[in-house]
Every structure is written in C-alpha cells, then in structure tokens.
Image 1 (spheres, rainbow, N blue to C red):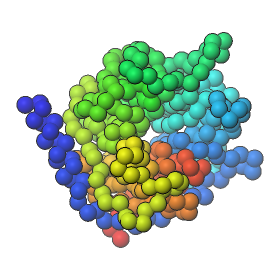
Image 2 (tube, rainbow, N blue to C red):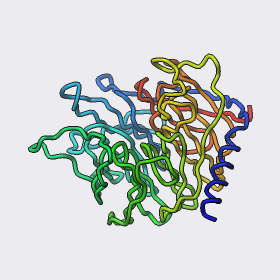
Image 3 (tube, helix red, strand yellow):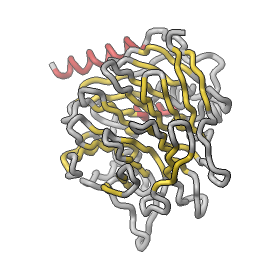
Length: 354
C-alpha cells in the first residue's frame, strides 16, 4: 500500500508540472544594496531576510589565501532599504566557504559554511550562541573531502560539506548534509542529536546533493534534491511523503550562463527544473519558489507541486540570473535572489496578475 501511495504521489506531482505555466511579469533591482566604497561582494551564496526587513548576505568575498583553500566567507547585514549596516563574525573561526544563510522565527542568524563543515547560530546582536560540526584541525593534514564508492558512513553530529538548515514548528533543527554525505540530520531545539535519514541514491528518501531546505506551516520539510532533479517532502519525523518534479519545456533559444546547453547525458543537476534553491512564503496560503541553473528560471508552485508561473532566464543583465544559489521570499510577490556567477543579489517584485 505504501509503495502504491509513493507511486501515486510521484505521478501526480509530475502531472501537475506538465501544465504550460504563464510568464510572471516582474521588476528587478540589482543595485539596491549600498556597499561602502572599499567593500565588494564575491560569489553570493546566501541571502535571507529577518522580521524587520533587514537583508543578510553570505558572500564568498573578502577572500584571502591561495586560489584553492581560500577563506571565502563574509556575512553582511543591510537595512530594508539596502543601506549597509555591519559585518557579522569578522575573522570567525568557521569562515571558509560560504554556502547559505537563514533567519529563524526569533531572528537568530544561521550561517552554513560548506568549507569548514560548520553551522553557526548568531543572536540578533551578532554573538555566537550555537555551533554544529567541527572543521578539520590545522595541525592535521587538512585536505578537501573526496567522494568515494561506497560512500563513507555519516557520523552523528559531524558534517561533510553541509548545505542548509531549517526548523519545524517545535523548533527542531534540520541540516542538509550535503555534497559528500547524503542525508538530513535532525537536532532538537536545544541542539541535541535526534536522528538522521537518507543515503546516497535516487530512490524515495535517498539523495544526490540535498542542496536547499524549506518548511511549510505544517512543519513538513522540503528538500531540494538537486542531483536527482526533484524536491522531496518529509514530515518532521523524516517519513517520506511525496516528491515534486518540475517539467516545463525549455525555449529553443535558451543559453546557459557559460558553456554549452546540457544534453541528455549531462548530470541531472544541470538540467531544466533541477532545484538549486527553494523557499516557501509565509502566511496562511503558502507558495513554493524553486530556481534552476539552466535555463536560469524561477518557478512559482503550489505546495502540491503545480507550476503556477515562471520568470527569468540565464544571463548577465538585470532580470537575468547566473546560478541562483539561495532565495528569500518574505512575501508572495517579493523575492531576493543570491547569484553565484553574477556576484550580486537582485530584489524582485512580481506582478502575477499583470
């Protein structure tokens, strides 16, 4: 019976996604952040918004060191109008290679650093209040993680290139882990280890680079399973519920930001609809936004997987995107998108009924 339900949910989600969705009209401001004269963004890995409308940017800027193994993490805060406020955690021990930033319901700031294998929580003042994971010791032979087959077993409380964090209604903490491990780690609100689920693979409940996380009002956990080109949904206990696949035709003239368009043999993470970043809007009626790397579009979906509209394409100009790595969606029609390749955050205003 469970197998039949899983098959039905997969078929239903794919059916929803086959509809021909409308283009959503939108405006974009790529210059709303006002940086001081001597401060620059690098690859912008993360963006988040707190309850006061302040924007937090996690950038691979301020790099020092060699081309490989550089210290490439800088956490910046801006006002709701884009004015620069401060840098948080300057010279922090965990800073290595920025991946994502999130804000919880209490305005705590969570930074996920892929390079140091650490997740750090700051309070709203900017002081460190909780730490997860531990980076390799400088006294040892600290080298990047390598992928081996069969994969190394995951270790409770330890991470290998983590990617994101989210929470359920009870404050339980969920961390996606990540590029080397293929699992979701669950901690309680006090930071105590609870459990993990997932393994490398393509079956329901398995992952190939769980890259981005979001939670709906019911506490269900949405996992952007990028390497499998799908979004998987679980309840807070880690039970598999369903999956969403985004299947929207690609325009014949679509071009990637660099390189050749992906072909049938290209990795699924490079294909249209592969979710690089997801976010869920607040409020009683929620919407799911997902972004892919090619053809560089943002998709608006209902929580059951129906594609309601889409916007954007790859490129360098305003209203075009270069690998959206994280999104913040404080309301249905206001989005902030962090771009790896264009070194920027764009503020989007959507007009779905226009």
